[in-house]
Length: 87
Image 1 (cartoon, helix red, strand yellow):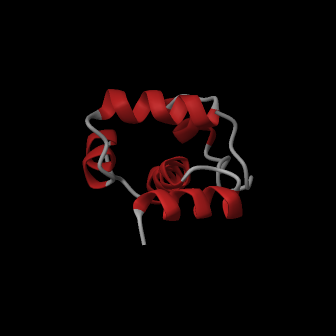
Image 2 (cartoon, one colour; image 1 turned 90 degrees about the vertical axis):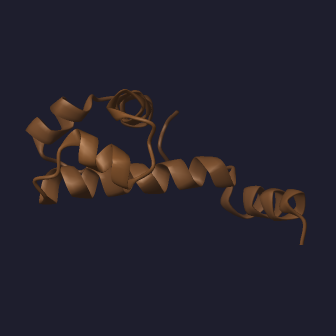
Image 3 (cartoon, helix red, strand yellow; image 1 turned 90 degrees about the horizontal axis):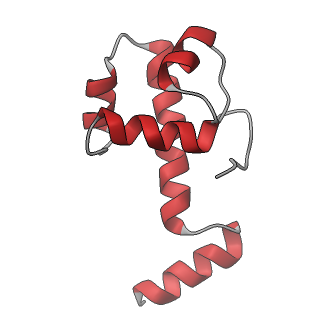
């Protein structure tokens, strides 16, 4: 199968691009790590393939509407609770 076919098939089935789906899945893992571990922002960014903490922070804020620090302080899942994240 071609990558174009897989991408288009995925978009039709999931109503979002494969890339966006992967980003949202990673951000859900970020939430889990922040609330259930003592990992630093740097460790989370490295583990999940973000360039650095700044990249992770900007991406997280774009999809969740809150900063990493605010999220960790509030301690409540956001992205895990909703099926579609705003972008």
